[in-house]
Amino acid sequence: MSYIERLDDTDRRLLRLLQAEGRISNQELAERCHLSPSACSDRVRRLRESGFIRGFSAVLDPQKVDRALLIFVEVVLDRTTGDVFDAFAEAARRAPDVLECHMVAGGFDYLIKARVKDMVAYRTFLGDVLVQMPGVRETRTYAVLEEVKSTGQLPV
Image 1: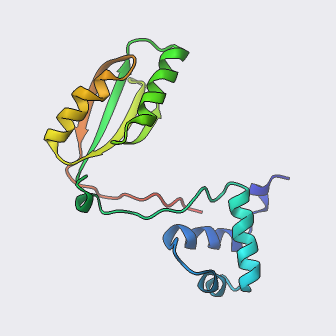
Image 2 (image 1 turned 180 degrees about the horizontal axis):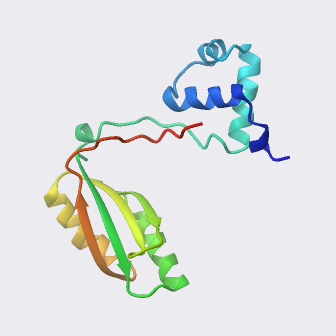
């Protein structure tokens, strides 16, 4: 039986709380999950070691760090071969403005989520980074006018 099949309600509660409050103390986490501190620590360690928890990070305010403009870009490659996919993916991983890059099925090859300061910065990113990536034939850009919902928390 795989570990996923053995997640119990307490594991799920731990995962929900840690997603929402990553800086919660072990003591508080244990109390809110009705566990002893050592049992709580053991469960969190097991969840980390088994890959359910990949890490912890701070969520920054994009405006305060000069990254107010959120952009989505559809990318069409000139060829859909393994070497072009690999080269494009590697270039996307190295681009600091690219927050997410997903290979997709449909009318284009990749969907990129990027954050930049403003449209001037986006124009620079487009010309100096994005269209210079290996295999890029065309792009379609969507500037976000309003973020209705933005979360990295998974329903558990």
